[in-house]
Length: 237
Length: 308
Image 1 (cartoon, rainbow over the protein chains, first blue to last red):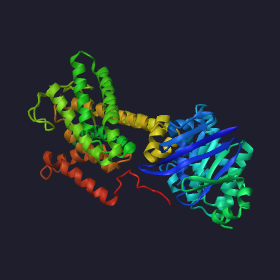
Image 2: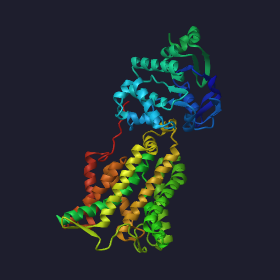
Image 3: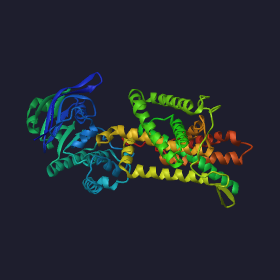
Image 4: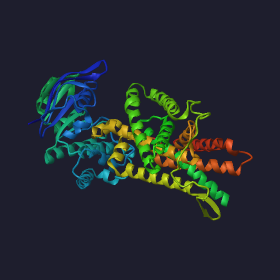
């Protein structure tokens, strides 16, 4: 049932330890949201799970321990990450970005082309700009491209690091609607990092609250909103 | 008219050599952002290797392919053993390392083949008879509009164009090419989509050195000899070609290389009393300065675009 299970995760940069033993879990079909203030360690958690930085602890994904494995191998197992700041290939066209997203697939160019059509259908703004270089897209379009690119690898788990960063509220809402639909229709599991608590709580199956490298609270969105102290401190309403 | 055609073809064939070396520079620069100062010396080492294969009785065609293999191994090894560990510590140090590699290779050539004379200048080094890839006897020419065009020159130009076309296909229509472009654009995201970036960089250095090897062989063939100073000026022109074309553009490297070859030969030929053989370098460099003043990223280079 559990797709991703993280236990006692510690990581940091050089001499600085940022994560002090994180436990979290994503079950199949869940949208799990990680909330926290600036500097709480959200992005570090994502990078530690995807293997972009060195880390200690247990990280089990789809029944396998991936703690010692690099990102280029982890993605082959079905985990795709959309890094903070989009992480597209600015010099490549929209289409080539999507091709690059399918790099690990071995099921033939026909299937890849069909998937490109599918995601261009889901993100029509990208379809209009398919031959443009990604660097010339607007922030919202790049975020959509980054998500579409991640989905091109046909992941079981999609990890998104603050997709709403720098986007207009309407575009953020659209993006979250799409994520919700992918979750419901395709059974895609999602681990989402957000500062935009109100929006994220709505689509979350479960929520983790992160504070200075530790999980301080967990529960469903409704449970956390019901806790007065948590609501005031983190959710701001 | 005859003279013009001859000078044009001579310029293009010399420029083809610059283009081959410049292509290697560009491939490495795109992958890792480094200027490989030893690009010319890698090519020279391979040219010596091809000479050696010839001495052992291997036909020139096969010897050249083997020489490109030597180049690939040399480039790939240099990346894995020297460049990668040092790039992690300091990107700038890589430049110094490639200068060291330049000296090392030249010294190696000298001690194996050249008789340990002044390195890099070729002064006093043994001139070894080099087999030409194309027919180059005095009677091997075709007459076009009254001009005698050497078959060797045409062969070199065609070879360069074929290599460029092949590279274009690899870059734009293969998995490896997509990976190379992705790594050049964003190394961290490349890992996230599953590209083994270290393998791609190793392959880039290998391919660059293999193409350079071909440049070295062709140039040694044009000069009918190989000596320690053969590739030094070629490397300077190739760097100039890459700068003119735009350091991140393979098309630019080819156009830049051919242009510099032609400009040099035209200038030396037509404004002889002003320029002459000795000063033709200066003319090429003047043109480059003029272009860069107008277009700082080179003719085909991309100014970084990034919306925030």
